[in-house]
Length: 257
Ligand SMILES: O=C(O)CCC(=O)C(=O)O
Image (cartoon, rainbow, N blue to C red):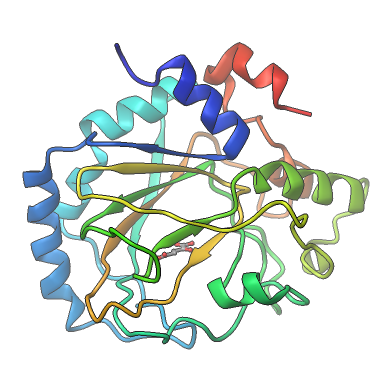
């Protein structure tokens, strides 16, 4: 069966993220990981304990071609543009448990550095919207607390409602994260993954990173992808849950509330 299957589309609509197992040839991923590992020695860790974005190599950029791009185009119903690749090797145990992007965030969010990409950090007044993020694990993550990419399934809908209801008719870009907390039943999920798996992440999904107590480096490549461009102050467009995902079709109707 070709991907995305109706079940995969439905899961993405409901949860705001999707893991497609074994989409990429592990040899391609191993080649990219070898480059990433070489770059890692030149990566400095920032105050959140995430490695700074690294310069992308051809081997890393090649991960985005072929099946990944086709999958996204099928889901979005539109050609895709890649804004860039960013990599965050998470190497140091407990080192990524410091600051949260979201003010007033409860303990769990703080511990994972929960955030929504593109939302302004304090002092930054512009939205930096992308339509989706693609995450490509370069090293296996086979248990919890191994620097796992962590998602709050369903949080994209809560974030969208929060932004839409709280700031309707305003353009209060600077203030938007002051009060947001996910509902109590929206819990973090530490993603397990193998090289070759691919994650598709909705742009409004709350996500973060688990501590890495494994002693092993976790490496992952991230592609921020845009289907269309918007003004970087357009809060209504930023909050629009499904504006970019026309290709998901009827599956959305039951989840787009
Ligand atoms: O590396 C991670 O686990 C998280 C990366 C992330 O949150 C991001 O790129 O926005």
